[in-house]
Length: 236
Image (cartoon, rainbow, N blue to C red):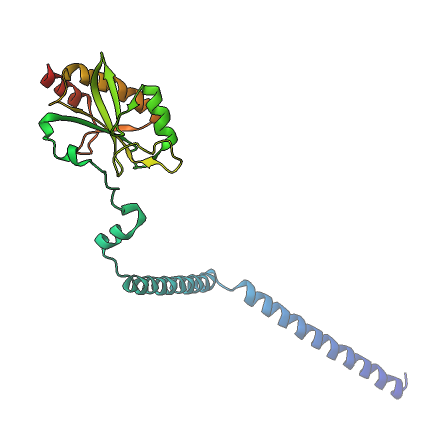
């Protein structure tokens, strides 16, 4: 081999060695990076997770504080007077005024038996409803435009309207309505109070069924069996 050929062989060997060293160095670098990733400890991972969770917690806590402050500000802006508020709402409106004719107001409670037939929510009874119930119970309109019931040829009881003007002169008119019926017995003029009372109870039962109403005492308390029993004993 001559000198020129020998030099080219040395050059080629040098290049191959340089390339091998370079590739070996790159391989070692990749190995070191892989080892570094694989040796990343669980403690470091957990630490990062905790920091993330802590950040989330703090943000949530901050949002809650802001929400609470907003609610407090809204509450501070509201001024409520429970008494006035209740009176001003539709659900707290006073009950409609029940009308009593002058001659009934003047009567002593011991000389009068009176029951009010009305809806518990003070819903009005129409003229058509009142007329149908009147006919079903066999009541008639007298000269004073009150309803009345007779038993054995005697006046048993009368019925006034719980709405002004207190009578039924316009009961057949479309615009007629009433809060209810005031069925009463004047004990001072009744010839047979006990019979009149039993007749009243019978007709009240018929009217209640026809109008789907409840029976109240003049005090606006519901009539009970005990009340009826007490009245019967008084009339015995």
